Length: 359
Image 1 (cartoon, one colour):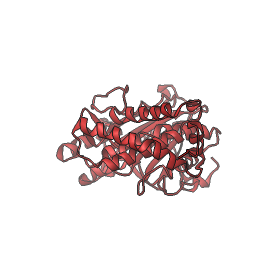
Image 2 (cartoon, rainbow, N blue to C red):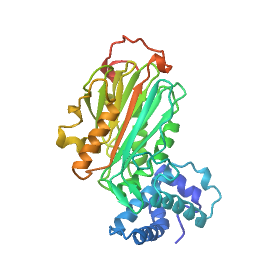
Image 3 (cartoon, rainbow, N blue to C red):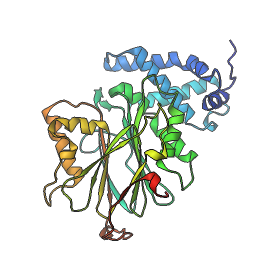
Image 4 (cartoon, rainbow, N blue to C red):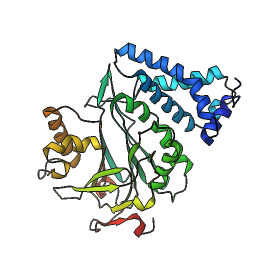
């Protein structure tokens, strides 16, 4: 049967345009080779999992990658070259997660470090749920970008489920994030708009019943933190000099279900020394038996919020098995002594719905 789209570039453009027959042709081209790839993975690690489900997730991940990649790399490719390029990409992420990234003292390789920002320092903790061979796999991912206007953007994402199945889908998120960021280049772009763009790319690239929960924050140089949730987001905010963090609960809609809106956004004003901690559900689930992260109290003059929460997590993990993928990112507004010097030390913290003020 003659393919509806006679060249790889035309197929890619059809996938990106959601044209009729494109997904069926893509699946016919790649489903069986991806199944063979999953067979190799299962055999290598003596991994007793559902081959059909793994292949389905790998196919969805491959489609997401192609949709989020501009058409130029596929120009003038033969079908064999196109199939080989997609399989090579999936094989790299399937067999070696986060290859080339440094392994921190905790022993879990993860996404690249967040970019350096003059007004904010950051620390990350990343612990996937499932070990297969010498690697750890999970459905969490984080990433960040420094915008031309000096704002630091940070995303935490959590694919439904955990372990290797969720990882295959989460591995496509870096391309989705980069693609959607560059497709909305205006300085006035809001976090909810970026999440909505990600939703529209992912909505039919995810298996049935699978969604992505996200928290996307834009931290402006003046201390304004604008946060958009996709799903249920929980953050911790610790004001300078306080011993107990405030638990912030935001509600939105999962990517793949319906697009987030600007009405779901919230913003806070961060003074110098204030800390905002973004985390996936795994952090709060792991600490639930001990009173939860909201019950955390910092000893005077001792630990930072990040250190205190990491110690609490280590204690919880020593007492029982890990429940889910765990990711947290701590963002702290630097003080004058650290070279910022942009805001008054006495500025009053505020909290507004994003729709209440111009952004």
